[in-house]
Structures are given as structure tokens and as C-alpha cells.
Length: 154
Image (cartoon, rainbow, N blue to C red; front, side):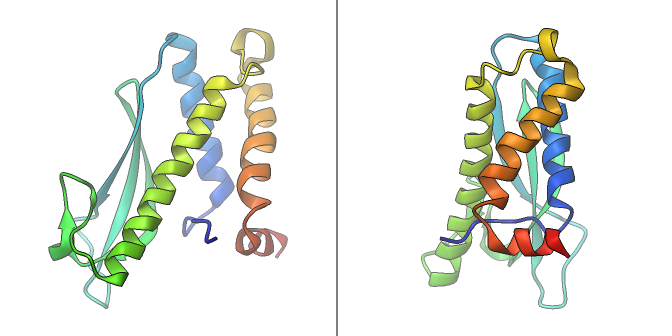
């Protein structure tokens, strides 16, 4: 099973996400989480493809996480469904990668929601970030993805 990765510093992105989430968690009891994929409109690579960018929303606050590492043909992009149009093998595999990213983020969000250890009043932001970063990010993704593990060992 292929586990998705981003093209830049993986752990710093997730720490940024966790910090963003914990800041919003302090202010509200019920949170609304969603992800959004969009095309970078001002860039086309040598192959004529445009990078797919990722943005997350938590209680209507947004955080842009940057490129997903996936580049697509602009003419195949469906803005409304945030996926590629068509039924070819390449389109289906790209849509599967986007679904894996969305499901992975949703899984992390649910783990954070269900985690009784996340109590900012008891632990404070720095301790909660450190504990969650170690337990969720490293165990969940790096343990399952040999490519990321070998990149981090270098």
C-alpha cells in the first residue's frame, strides 16, 4: 500500500497542523474540519501540468499546507468535486492518492478529537504538541512509510 508524502519537510508541516488545531481547540468545544484541494493557478511545470495544493479548514479558519506533490492537467480538473474528471488508469490512481490524503488528514483529526490526553489546561501547548507529534505523526506515518524513514535517516 502506497502511503502519501509531501515534497517538503514532512514533520514541520504536521507540527504546524497540530499547532493550528490546538490553537483553535482552546476556543471552541465543537470543531468543524474539512480539506480542500485546488490547483496552483500561477505555475505550470515542464510537462504542462499544474500542482495540486492542499488547504485545511478548522472552524472556518484556514491553513494552506502547500503542494501535495501531485501535478495534473488543468483541463481534467473538476473544481467542484476537487478531483480529476475521467475514468483512465492515471486519473483513477491520482484520485485515489487525493482520497488517501483527505482520509489521512481526517483520521488524524479524529484521533486528535478522541484523544483524552489533549487537554490544554493540563499540559499546555508545547507539551501537548510534543506528545501528539511523537505519538500520532511518527508512529502513524513514518512507521508505515519506508521512503520517509530513509529520507529522515539521511
